[in-house]
Image (cartoon, rainbow, N blue to C red; front, side, top):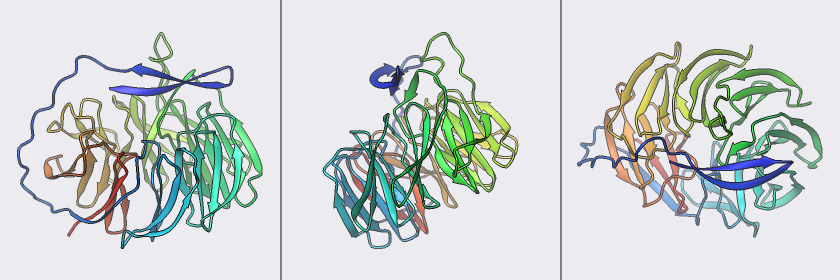
Length: 372
């Protein structure tokens, strides 16, 4: 497995490449035709243009806001799959999209935070470092998680910087989507191997919950960033620390409920009973949400490079790096369906909407699916 890392040194973020292979690389076994136990129907698809991993669609009740690497930002009707509006920014976009339905935010390769409203640029702000996590637009504010582990809060209408919460961290950070989300009246961010709760008005720290603690003799071994997505049920969040642990916390008290050793660079998802994760070796694991005890593991996709999962009432949706998507049973991880999307892996991870889910491939193919 190859992961892209950012090396933050003296306030600068330098791109480096690091091979994070653990042991020999094995070829996955061929999967013969899978009997369809649960049908999956594609209802529409669009070609958006090449889309990197850090461009995650923003889901709203009636539309999805998407961006591509070339700088095109647009809103798509979730029911019909047609464009509602489009704004060519003309700049390469590296992080996004964040949206509250009215304002939409992305970060460009020039480290500019760009906020759009009514298909026009509302304001811009030059950030002091790179960002790979979609900005959060909520409560008339815009929040940004930077690669140097700073969290910034802006006034949504004017772009005025309200606060900057800088946290010390290890020199390396992952060049992939992290965690930045609201939970009640608290802003939750993933910083190093910790989930922290911040006051969204002032940036003041409310609580700090370690999912994993850095260990090792070098910077790479000590890297334990929180990776998105995560699983929320009420006041409880469950998340993965890169190649270290999966754990759940109570966000009211900021306390760890449980952690378990786990090895992957993909986030987790779940429901009120289970937390589901895809491991680095392609094994899909289910943990009991209440206790962290392992409920089951599925080996059928072993040695495939899998996306983060999406848990739906009909099953677990995952995709591999070859463009295949799978539906697995919530009961034991058995294969319920398999279908080809295209020849590229996903940008981001599967996302749910009312009655279905979206898959966005790095080729830029956005497709909506439903369960008949």
